[in-house]
Image 1: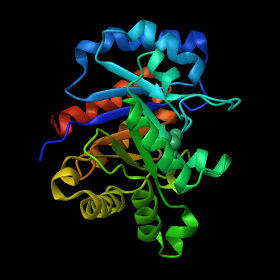
Image 2: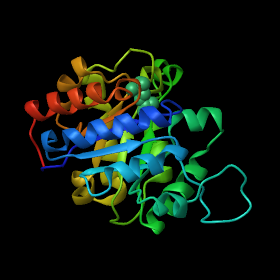
Image 3: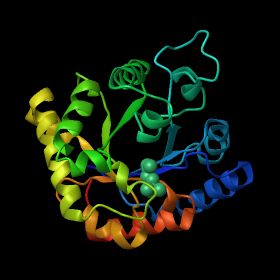
Image 4: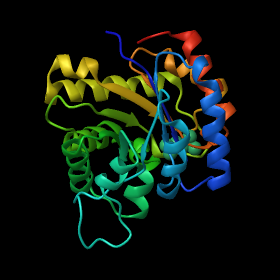
Length: 254
Ligand code: PGA
């Protein structure tokens, strides 16, 4: 089964307008070097127009780090799928662990966001992952199965999954390729139970958590790891491009 890899940069609350401008310009210069892969930027909301203007017509895509489950209404501080679409976004993150932890996002809310994204024509990138405490207690599979089962879209629409163990995010403690592969294979088996073998075999499952140029190739050579959601190491466009390049030479897919 050939799955086109995804390399996604999660800028979180980093980079400002000038840096976003320079970043998008650097990627635009490098588009001819990009392998057959989905390359996606998730800037803070106010920087989406900067990216959209500079990368329009290029193979690089972008999207929001979050969205509200409603399309409009009295929701101060929130952003709708329609706002993301106004700037030609194609993807949106749903259920990142920082939103679950800092904004109390429940599985039900994440499921509503995933459903809204799909109905509005955005591709959700659903994030799941266990805390260190859950892993130590032997509850990793229980947490992953619950988070995925609660929010996996039912139909055939395009979406992707990111496995991001909370203990590996921003800590420099990347999961080993074996630990990550085990979790990815488990998630694919849960997806198969819900969606059927054929859809699960096509589902792209990204790894996230302290991915860097020097650990990316070993991770992506695992059979169920289909790319990355990258925070810290994606903030410098050359480091992001380095990760993409090193993976392309390990496992050309797509
Ligand atoms: P990190 O973040 O690469 O800085 O660990 C990943 C993420 O939170 O998506």
